[in-house]
Amino acid sequence: MVRSKTLANYDGLMHGFGSLNETLSLMLGTENSLPIYKAEQTHSSVVKHVRSDHKNYRDCDALISRRPGFVTIKTADCIPIIIYDPIRKVVAAVHAGWKGLFSGVIINTLNKLKDRGSRIKDLRIVSGPHIQVCCYAVSEKRVRLFANKGYPSSSIAKRINGTLYLNLNALMYYQMEKTGIKKAQIDSLDICTCCDNHYHSYRRDGKNAGRNYTFIGRTII
Ligand SMILES: [Zn+2]
Image (cartoon, rainbow, N blue to C red):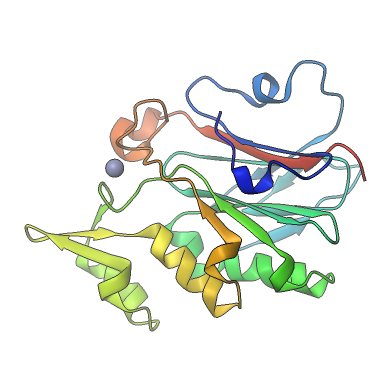
């Protein structure tokens, strides 16, 4: 399990990005009795707030919580993003692949946090292991989809020997900066799920790929 140094020093905050065979119960410990809130992801841009009486959230790709317990997502190449507001004690977990980035799951999450009283400048953000530009070969059409929305293709994609590679992290930064987030607020763990055999990768392992689990949450409120 990897963690970000930027989130290490907050009292009562726990987070982690799991690799092969690291289940949530393994990462959180069998003694954990706090609730685990799960998003049943669909590559959408839907964001939900957790409720105390409800653990599984259908048809959404981001969860926001102020309750004790953990919000979780699972990925195999898409970006797992966790967000913490240390002032309002709010956590969020976001699953952002190219579809989610395209349809606005990050922007929707930041807007929902703002609606509930978080200030953009207070947010701490970590993007976890995902497929990096080294491995994410895509069609011209996919890059054009983003270019048509105003993203500069020179910064979101790279061409090597005639093949185009999409940079999901650059897309994430671009969207975050548009919303007012500064680079210093973001920590990107520099791990490629496709290059690194310690992680599940859809691109490398195909349809039978497992999933890497991510969690963030507070043990006290
Ligand atoms: Zn790679």
